[in-house]
Image 1 (cartoon, one colour):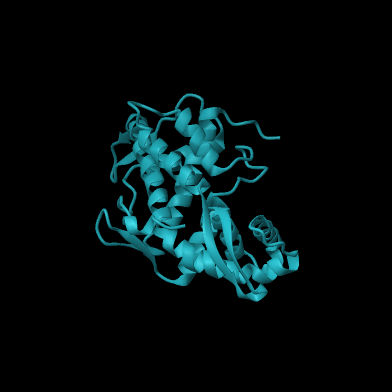
Image 2: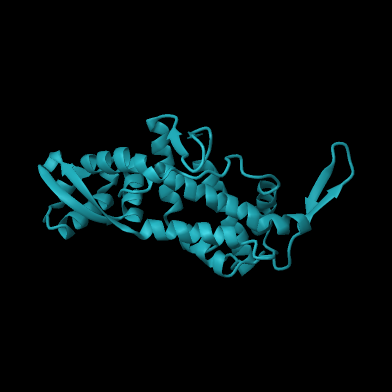
Length: 271
């Protein structure tokens, strides 16, 4: 069994992983930022790019592997822990990251009511469901064929039953495509700008949080071209954590590629 990572090592590993995930999702290869603040919005390059975004998003909203060196937890839980007990906080540099994390968590756990027509089972109903739940359900449908989405069908069955529509698992399986059309093609498309703003703010929050650490860690050396190295902080002994720290410092050498943006209020009023 591998030696357990220290608190500072776990933080470094999570920040490296979260930075990679957020940069993959908020990436100008898959989306464009249109308009000007405070009325910006994002547009995916294609429906395939929106599906890719949802697949990576469900990973970000899920737990890590049971055998991960950090132990099993969600990325959002890790961010909340870092926001409460940061290892690199200087002059409250963690504040933007804390603010971005808490706002996203609060938004995700909000329950919404959505009118849904499920023609495959001839059902019109109103589903009460949290944003976190339906985003994860849509992401798993995006990722898997329906024969590997029985778990999602069970969640849909439970949600339908809670809304007063007793439903068999077979009917829930039949209704998955209708659910996906409503919640992925329609509602995720509506929410995508807001979600991208949250994710981008987290990415910028990591950058701002680690600027003091970067400045005191980097050592520039003469050469042609000039070289540099990083001094590892106390408590960082794991080879894996050191590699993550090096990658993390390289990531915060420059600002995130996608500018900060503020999404129009008209994409934040429904669902």
